[in-house]
Length: 183
Image (cartoon, rainbow, N blue to C red; front, top):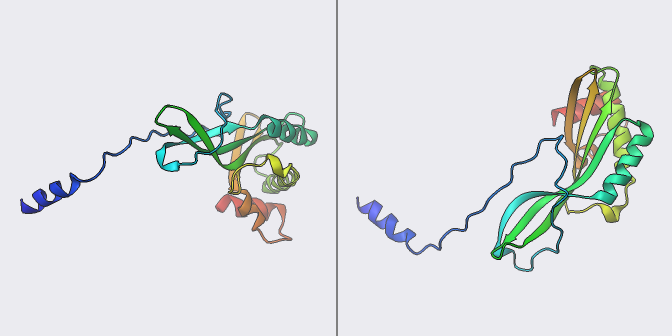
């Protein structure tokens, strides 16, 4: 009983906690919210309630889609910023980007061909590597999510750009896919 009294008196001097709400992480097929707000990062981050957030990058998405469809016209591709919304006490929102992420959906003839998946990974990473650096936002390497579709079925893989870059050179397409699938 004495310990409870001591603990109760210790917590009376703590400040009231701020409530922080989070957003549900969207499904990989769900596009980013085009109504997201873009502003400059807060100069006083202590005055924020943080929420995970996504922000569309229309110019980068358009260029990325054009490049991907140059290889496969029926492909779909988007680029978007992932980060946090800093929600201020007055209700205003500041988006703070952490990374640029990429979603790609490709049609393949065989969902069991790991070599084909690896070849597509290499092609997509070549495209991503050629995108204008000034359109890539955030300090962290982004994430790549790829969906391979065939006959109404699909298979997916997600990996970070730095994981791909860390792969040893000279490995086969199949080894690339397997290495990224296990990470």
